[in-house]
Image (cartoon, rainbow over all chains, first blue to last red; front, side):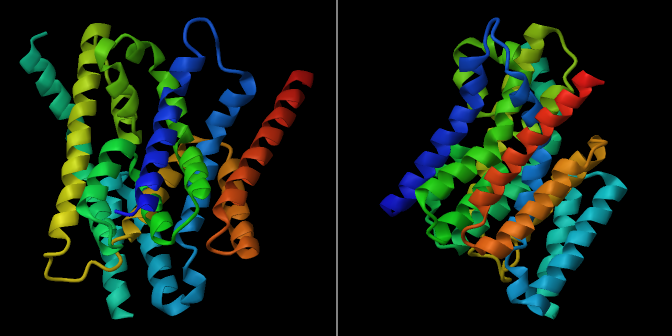
Length: 106
Length: 231
């Protein structure tokens, strides 16, 4: 493992643990979270998920047929199956299987 | 309640996590192995970082040689939701004694969701929370190591297994969409994400996109609060 990889992992671990521990350091006892922060916390997750979906699909414009079409169909499979059963595990399994097959067929 | 009964409840409560962590963990292990990272790094990430969605992103960031600052900022934004999870169980976790550090470290989307469904007396609830967290961490480690080891032995190519990450995000996105009656944050994220991708390119757009989204949300929240106060 290169030094870069070790540092990348350690920094990620440190940031992640700090975020999980933050409320225990800041808001224990009588101190409450400021209003703007709790309001941000209520809406931020949906925005971040949306940005992450864009991040996952960022490569599609460079290869519309090869990865764009399989991605679009597989995202549709995930969305529809999730609407239908509300089972995260099944939707991920279906969607990934469809994507892997399309990647080889198209 | 006896310990065996506590363990039984915890195991049953953790069953949905068992299946998804083994599968998603294995996909993660395969992805890491495909990207050329050694088994030790898989073990290290799944033990110390332990946050499903971000681990996938970390793999692609490390594989593309992203700067440590970009990695830190992406970790900050992607995992900031854990801060809000911790807030929900502040009291319960504060009372777990010497298990506290582990309880703080092991908060994930899935254990949070299971903890929300526990209807037990406080003492027993904290015990079950601990065992659900411990089981889940073991499932995740097992899945990722299995993926990293078995991935190379599979008789077929695992190309495209990374779609697992996209699928995970799409399901979380839909879940959040259904739970909220105001879709501005979700649509804002999509728009800002795409615009920043077109302006800054694939390698650079995450950081400006996340900062811009947060700024707009803080502004929008304060504007709406003021309007509500006026009304």
